[in-house]
Length: 281
Length: 243
Image (tube, rainbow over all chains, first blue to last red; front, side):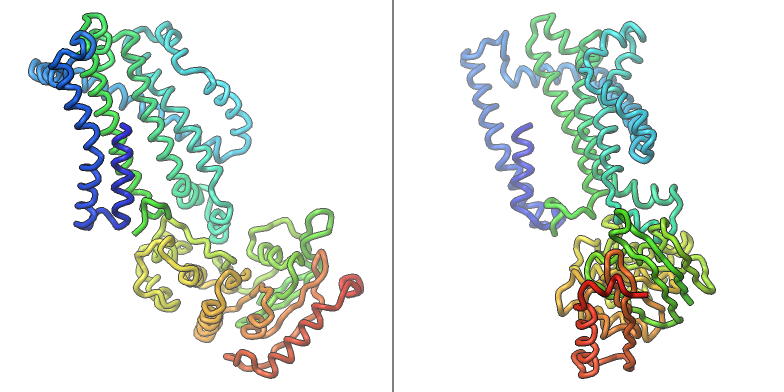
């Protein structure tokens, strides 16, 4: 992860122009190359150390063993099942949490009375560490999907909610006045000025919400599941197979990165009007 | 076409804002509102534009259609997520927004090749030109201008003053220009109201009887400038004694 951000920064610094130009792509490629040096050295070192017996195989198996584990799961077909069930949970929880946050956040951000009424409650609920919900949700909804998805949705809800409220309340009064000069109705004002202006912080909220969603899916699957990447962690722990545990951590990292990249791509596309360092050119 | 009668809007227990403003504006006139800061000039425009509704007195606009008032602020206030052409079309009805009506105004303000740029890529002068086009596209009866050029550098300022004048010559839009720049007021306006005091009142009215376009620094304008400076410098007795 660290090398990823580093890589990205290098690419940014090296190419202030748009990345679509061929020079930009070349420089981005160079950025990836530079960013990959350290991880590759580490991997090779790890492999060599494991093969020479410097690392205990029952604690830290060689990268190739982990890769073999993933490939064998792929071949027996279980990999797809675990990945798809975890992805489905994250996606459903994320969708429910985001929709709830948008609706409630928009009301709280827009109407002062609603803010006074609802915000103290949400702030209080927010200060409960979300994992504390786990036992309650299991009591309420059992150990099946509803409790898992609810837990993820709760995790996703708060960052999205907080950011959307802040985004709406932070809309420049000067821009709202422009709308009022043209006699926009409250609905038009919301649609044409407030929502687009709040979009950047909404997307920020979605990205941190997604991060929490991944965290909570692990918690949800640890608490009792028969499928999913979090379940693989438990299986790995119980069967003393660190390769399974590390393989599943690796898969979490890859999936988390991919979903975040999707949001980042959406962010770039929909916020290309923003006057920020990443948008120079 | 615009009549304002005993208009009053004050803040902080009558220590800021303006009071007892009577104005009547004829069609096609450019009116200047000149005054030192804190005399309620901008508040006056906010009241006239409808942004501030807590006033006393009456405002009447003859043959008023729906979108009768256009407003330009000190800052361009463009919507950063819209391109230049969409910013210009912003005030139009939904059906007209996607037509190429904006082209006329884009050309009018000299931004022909910039229709797809975003505000972040515009200079201050270009952004203010876009704002002019946006204010004009709805064809307002009255255009209110709140120190529209005060944040620009001297050259851009002169260019835009000339642009505004050329637009006025084509369209004969009635304008009310709030400014603290005496030269600007003398260059553009037919009549200038001098506001003084806290809350501000109309202290004096100066007519500029000279055909537009005028020459900057012309002898007559210099004389008027000296006169206005003199009016503005008259100290405290002014505010209390008037009427």
